[in-house]
Amino acid sequence: MRIEHAIDEYLSHLRIERGSSPLTIEAYAADLADYLSFLDEAGISDLERVDRDTIVAYEADLLERGYAVTSIDRHISVLKGFHRFCVREEYAANNPTSTVKLPAPPNKLPDVLTIDQVNKLLDLLVGDDPISLRNKAILEVLYGCGLRVSECAGLDLMDCAFSEGYLRVVGKGDKERIAPISGFALDALVTYLNEGRPELVKPYAKATSAVFLNARGGRLTRQSIHKIVAKAGGAIGVDDLHPHTLRHSFATHMLAGGADLRVIQEILGHSDISTTQIYTHVNRSHIQEEYLSAHPRAKKRSGT
Image 1 (tube, rainbow, N blue to C red):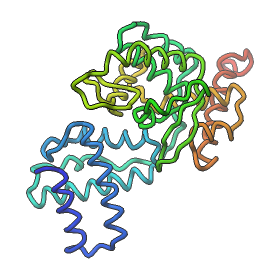
Image 2 (cartoon, helix red, strand yellow; image 1 turned 60 degrees about the vertical axis):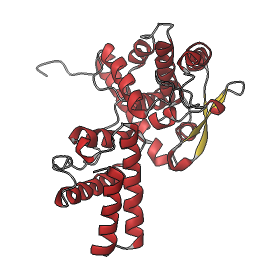
Image 3 (cartoon, one colour; image 1 turned 180 degrees about the vertical axis):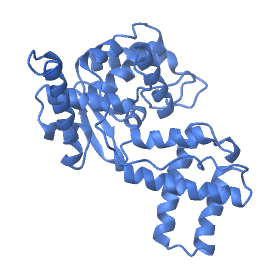
């Protein structure tokens, strides 16, 4: 059964048989519409093609888009109810959410790369073919501008104001902000747009204003960017590298370099300064690690 049809049936079930309130149904409909959009990008339209890996990938995607753990918990809970309904109504044979656990509250600081790791990662791609130029630009922009993966995938040509030194970014809740771009990120993006992107544009493909294109001339998806980043991370010995780790690294390195926390908040698009303040803790932990490893009297001698 097609997923959009099953969603319609589920919402009708909530409204008619469960007597759910209009606000509840509206919230469920919004979460399921986001899920459907994710599946569309992944090329999945039939319930039987959804498996546990699909649900886990969606959960990771929500995290990359900056959703709080409580919001991710709500989304996954909605999916669990939806897929249980589909099995009960025999729209699908299996429930892909049955073994997926709800996300636990965060109990550790976000992962960040060292500056040396970032340099190795960004110096990795040196080819001049269109795909290499594109992938190089993606990595430079994710780290150099602190973008979320969805913001990177959603960049359009009109968003690039190079003469003014910024990108126009559409973040969570369709809120627009300005992300500065310069140095290596600017050079890599300009090179890709001048030398790589024209080679990826296909005369038979639907015209698109997207900055980052796939090999078929269409907009590159968030999932594809995930794979590009993970592959590059593996090449420098960092397993399961996520685009959001580059965003965390951007903020941490900015703070370590003396940037004001309010400036970092504005660049990242955080509505609340408390969200940005986690990077002060990350920075302090790095300082402590450096101190313990480098200071000759930071550790007690054995036997004392």
